[in-house]
Length: 253
Image 1 (cartoon, rainbow, N blue to C red):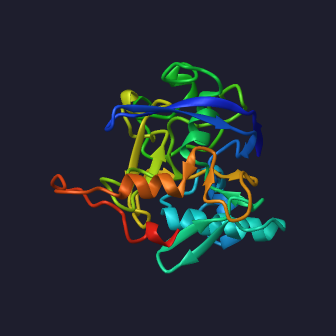
Image 2: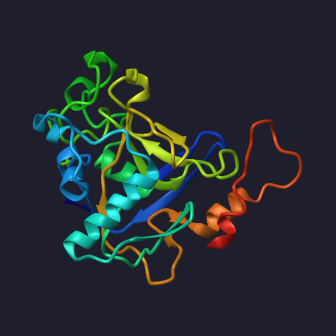
Image 3: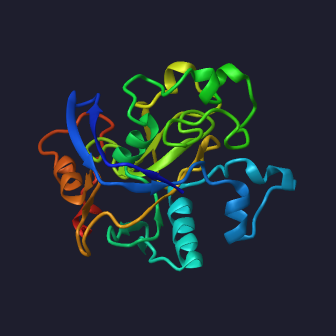
């Protein structure tokens, strides 16, 4: 785990053409994506060759990732961050255990105070389509950013805690960073996509953050809040074709 300093990041939403500034307290985030070896240490599962231990674990659903976070917390003696209720997950922001980063945390950690699309020359920091690889590569084989974090761009997309867009895509969660098969224009600090939390996607993995970022019972932390989710999901009147606002689940918060 690497410490990420406090700071302020401007988050942009292309669909709504809006921006918001997020103030972040210091937090911890893993230097690499979670590897198959780390996954197997808790779950007893590994690929057919032990040489695959340094390859980031994939495909991983959002639910797989948060369950692994709880296992890792229990193993290390930390307070688990997540509670499960059927197909929903709630986050105890006061827990000191492992968790997924919020989107604001992820982008601040990725940029490492830079303002350019990438934190270095793409070929030197990221595995992308340009490398012509058939899958993700072992972690930390390319250059890190100034916070000591590897593969923040490229190799695998990474799950974040936030919903992608509760007004349009319902329960979809956010993915950041780009993957090994993505074109260079899709591999940058600001790029985002979303997917269903139970989707099995070959180019998706995760990295973990850790630490309490709010008071017990608070449903807000580091750029995310349940109240904001509810507000965005409360769409009135006729909906554009294909929109599925998330309402019922958010009422549980």
